[in-house]
Image (cartoon, rainbow, N blue to C red; front, side, top):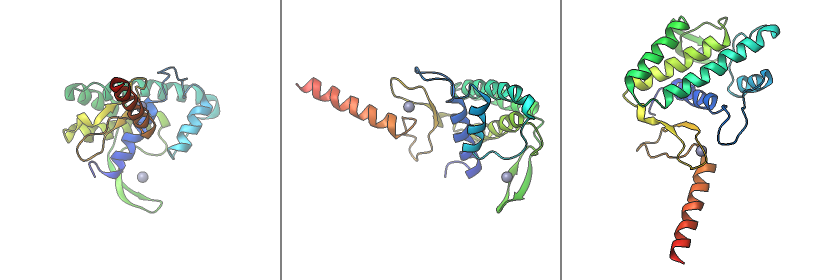
Length: 186
Ligand SMILES: [Zn+2]
Ligand SMILES: [Zn+2]
């Protein structure tokens, strides 16, 4: 394991959040409150949600967060990421403490469940990126190598060799390379 389990999950969730942005011809996957509901359910976020009339603001905060996550992910510079991490943690009034609940033994929390979802997600991203900077592992925060994909992913492989965001992009790249080789040979 490269990072603690909760850090690895949080990094995967942070990448997924940033990847909801419209790019590569794809639609914005976090355009509506219903999209956020699906994201929250898919990544098993617990804790409070905004009152229905405030859900648009909740969504706006999380849409802003994904831009910041993408900026820090691709910064490639520890000073920049450290600055961003410190801001995320300060803005979210992060208060690291141990918690034990729902069958999970002692683990790190830095917010309480009654804080706004956007704040809790921001602090979670901040704590995860903090671990990456502290461990000197910034080069594990990657952008997919496929020509037509710019999704973020975290490379947790032993030799830092992961190039693609998922098997789909990897397979497509393999197929393209195969066809290029074949064409060159013909
Ligand atoms: Zn917990
Ligand atoms: Zn990809």
